[in-house]
Image (cartoon, rainbow, N blue to C red; front, side, top):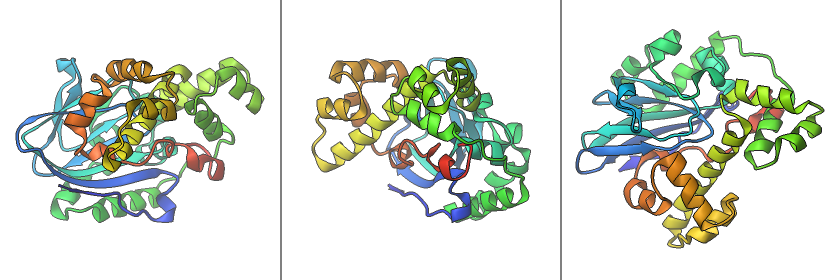
Length: 281
């Protein structure tokens, strides 16, 4: 098993939060869970197309050489033949506008291929097949960004999203920004496709997932401590949210999913952190 986050040029930092190559041998065919998170992702598989659907919704299943997914509140089911190899890219909200040409909100709950959403990047799977490795992807994204006209900054948007994701209430964040509650709710939905409550939930799930991984790798996976650190009321609250959003308990996920690429993706929060220094997440 090999994987690891790739260093990115400074010009890409406001738009791309991670480029992660992966080569994971699971030993037998199966289904990998793609958990909700706070970044848009697109997958570029090698060897065979990605076979993915929203869990429990067979009608959404598709096989393609690229898959872009917006924010979501249900797990994805990624079918594999025993090995997964490719590159996973996490985009910030600002990156969705700059590199895909659409607001992140328009992709919420969607599974689409690059030709469908970003025809100018449709060549990426072929380029990656000819020259496997994250450097190929980084060069292509940097080239696309240089040719694009990135949207102008929208002051305050990233800060507001980050505050809501951290657990603050709409009224408090709206007052801080000098906005009405309705304006903030509409802005959050437009930017990420989720209502504020669901943005808080997926952000909390992402925090707990990274805390679980860190705890498991240190040999100290105490679920009650992870729940408290992530912002849940207690262990039972965390378990309920994991079952609802992720389709399994935290313990089950640790047993079945730990080796997968998602565990080495960018830490939660990077979808909007750059915004106070560069505008829209």
